[in-house]
Length: 192
Length: 199
Image (cartoon, rainbow over all chains, first blue to last red; front, top):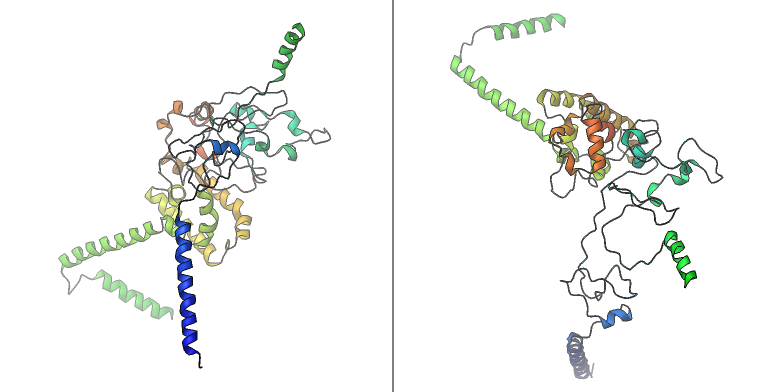
């Protein structure tokens, strides 16, 4: 081992270089870099939602229901949870074939192959006891329009179609017009 | 054998009948009183220990099946933080009824020892039978354990939804139905309910 001092010097040099590189890296990395903008172009023009403004309604065509415009390196403040409307007042249907919405809460209703909590009141046999609207006759029909003695299995899971309504604000504006409105608008267009 | 038992029994009976020779009347009465208090305290403490949720969920049969289901319901978590534990609904609060229920529970000890429901599959197989016992008990005592907390005369029907208020007034208020008739499966999942009247 003639070159023992050489090896020692070489090791020392490598260590010093590594230390300098490490310090430099830390320093440049520690500088505050601009927030990475990951959302749509609309977000970039907006100021990031501060935690105080909880329900920043998305503007324009932007639908960002989950992060609501908060940059992803910041903790968003979720809006308050919406409450289910529980007034037992039947709502209008937006179109004739719309499944009626549920005008009451259905928290913890068990709907599985063992039991169906909805049918406790809405089954034909129980509707009078609870003064509930019984399920429609179409729900007893199989797909070949044959009537069955009980609810058709394909109609068994009520909340596949029937849902509750909450007091949450709509994420986007809705300009749906029902058929009555469309029909009433037509004569005016003809007149013009 | 029989004669030996008989002579031993007779000697015990003679000892019990004879007045005490060594101990004073005061010692015997006071000692008896204190021993009685200690016995009763120990008995009651042990009884109440079996009346806790920690005791119930000490067995995996309860912890892994019914307790997990309870956790999702309003009787476990709700806005005001008042909650029902297992014995609130499953053990009568009245002393004599409680002791009667505890004696029935010896069957459950038997079941635990011999593993009647020691797997999920066995539990599901027995679920309907177990549930029917509870429904029968609550039906027979007019849903007493529900009514320990839920009192019809204290129900403010105006603060219920109109649907609930109407149904409570019509069926519960007239006494035609009791809580369990409609509120089966309120704290646990229901077994296969085919052919079982609800409501």
